[in-house]
Image (tube, rainbow, N blue to C red):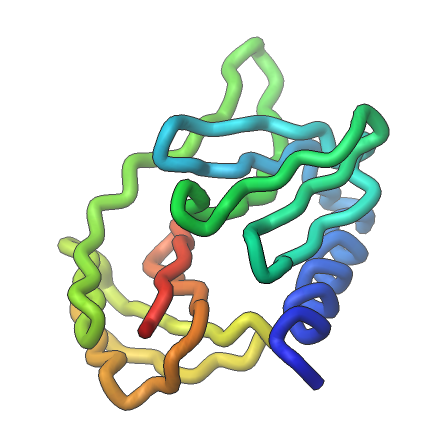
Length: 148
């Protein structure tokens, strides 16, 4: 199974779980230029393509190139007129080490959903991981890294 097929499987799983009783209302796409919000009900497909992440909605397709793409986040909107936004994620990645100051633990997942690393503390050594795209989870935030 190639990388793209594995990625689509993960996204399909996430979207299927979003339709449960505690459903998520919104998907936020974080880019280096800012965030874009999509209503879950409007999303028909999410795909990780060679050229970037594609979010297809009832209104059309949106492609986010990997050079500008940071992360995806599903969120349940809160009542009271306050719109949820991304918390600023302060992290450092130098190709071999991920550091998230203040994190109690760090988990690293491959795009097929497999946990490939878990450490206590705010630093994770990823130099033994194969080249690829990974999701890093620290507390209640997640972001992607690209290991070359």
